[in-house]
Structure formats: C-alpha cells, structure tokens
Image (tube, rainbow, N blue to C red; front, side, top):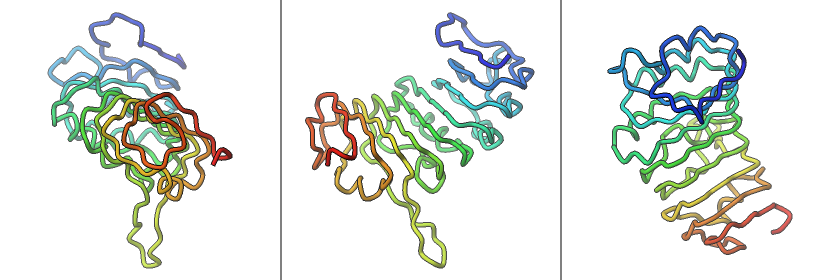
Length: 215
C-alpha cells in the first residue's frame, strides 16, 4: 500500500499495526491518540514508515514528548499537515514544541492552533527547505522571521518560502514590507481575515491573492 486516506472514514480509532505498511508514501486523516488507548495506533509507529512523503494528522489528546521525536526519522517527508482541532489546552502547545521535523520538509500546514505563539521549530533555521507555509484559523500573533545562526561569521537564516497562506488569523500583527525583506523568495501569497497587517496592498479583511510582480 502506497496511499492511505482516512479523512472521510468514521473510524473511532485506527487499530495497531500501521508500522507494517513500510511502503506507505502518503498518510492522511491520522488521528493522534494517547497511549491510554492500547488498541489504537500510536504515533511512534510512524517511525518505521521511512518512505512517507506526505503526512496529514490531527491531534487533540496528550501524547508523550518522546513520541514527537519520530519525525526526525522520516527523512523523505516533504508535506506535513497538523490540525490542532481547536484545542486550547496548554499541553497541546507544549507537545507540538517537541516535534522534530526533518530538514527536507517543503510544505507545512497548521490549522486551528489556539495559541498565541507558534511551535518553536517553525522558523527558517529548522526548516531550511520549506517552500510553502499555510497558517489557517488560529490565534497566533507573531510570525518568526530571520534567525541568528550563532556562528562566528554572524550569518542569519532567512525563509526560503515561495508561497504563503495566512487565513483567519485576526490576532496576527505583521508588517508586509518587513516580511518581504525576510522572505526574499516569496512570490505568491493568499491572505484573508488578517486584520492587523500593515502596508498590505489589498484589503486584508477579504480574500486577497498577492504576487511579487504586483508591488
């Protein structure tokens, strides 16, 4: 099996045994369960799916920190989508801080994240190959830009993003002109219902599609 899509299945939980699908390349609709349910698929089973390229999951229950470290083993992973399911528990925020995505990741989607600060690993230094970032329907108020590499030459990591999607982020405070400096490769963006964007050339309250040649 190469593709497994559970997004439209009415399963109460996915049973154990996912690690046996060693040739799986795309997994969608995985609902992360706590270890309390011994019959359900556990997050740690994903570490054996080394051919995985696309992973879409939702998380609302508490998972141990060490389970989130399995992402570093998925060296072929290109697309990661996380749905926080509107969970306001601080434990969810702390858990997602422990995600360790591989540097090969090219697309990242984070939805329904009800916390002001993004997970610590969402920054240009830890995601050096990221080309597309989608943040949708959340309470974040800040988007990390350049990061000091703390090297002798004082180099700075900047985003390699080419595409950006910011949707329904009413608390996000952002200066579009500064964003252009910190995302030099950005040439396409979709923005809607982001009320605190400065110097944005369109109405941020409505769906707007920006391309670099419009500036």
